[in-house]
Length: 463
Image (cartoon, rainbow, N blue to C red; front, side):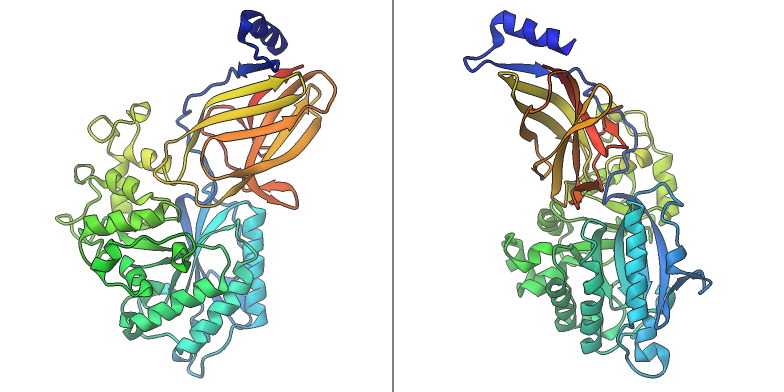
């Protein structure tokens, strides 16, 4: 069928002087409207782990970190809340302690299991016992820095697994408020600097844009005129918002002019994850209602993730609202609940809109893929591209690394150095580890993603 199409195309005079013919693949180019479980985004499940000198435990110490089942839930994203209060003298009644080899080994095991399940995590460490609201439980700043260095030696092994580090650590719930030291910009700067110095390519999220202004040594007004370039350490600094839509300041997330600050921080969230917890302290002030433009906030801030459980009052409201022309122009989704609309638009959502094969002299193949990102956000990690070709019998005749993916249209080239026949082409958009695809991205088109190959079907060819 495809071969016939090739020669018909040529007979109509569409071939070029170099004998190149172009074939638009007959695929379903529509958004399938289903929830696509892709890396680094979504409603997350949270879990508190107690980090002790003898190792890491959960469920009141009844189970070890190695026992946690990351396949228990269907969601892609977890929020790992690591309680390291036992290593602060203000909690253990003795002295500040460095993290033990047992604790670090169990952290490695926990993240290794997460990776094996091909799930992602936002991770935060905290000195408040059981991630509670206790204040002033931190060890010395020197010990905090040592802990960050120790933790980073493990986290750096899991760049494809860890969505972001919420710098946290200090203050109630590790949310950088309440404790005396959280008001000291020098301490906050030291925490952020140490995370940046000790990690490689991992996003570091702090609690307020003000923390980033202080880190840059700028006043609010100066910061509004300042753009963070990619060679600046602060390019990796974003925010996590655990009072999202709570009121006009997101309960203290934004300390100045909300509109201006969102405009400024959106330049960071365009390339970094952004998320947290939806909040509702007062019905009169909350911004989660549709008429208050909650979806506009999500789009502007490039929302990547939210807590699945918190706040259920808000998520129940979204479940009972219908997405319609009143709230947006995405007509494909009219009629579904706002909750489902949000769930399907966290971060990036790539829809393949056209796949064209350009064949030259039955030997050289150039492939053009046009994509439409309909999500709230963008791809925040560069991915690898691997072309996979199967013959009629399902045998892989080609597996070729063909470049990088940054969320834009894709152009790839290959030589057809295998026998003439009928072939199916797949593209894995993934993190290559030992030349094997991990954490693949699926297009949101019906029937294109092959879970066995971890790749998207992009067309077929006979030559």
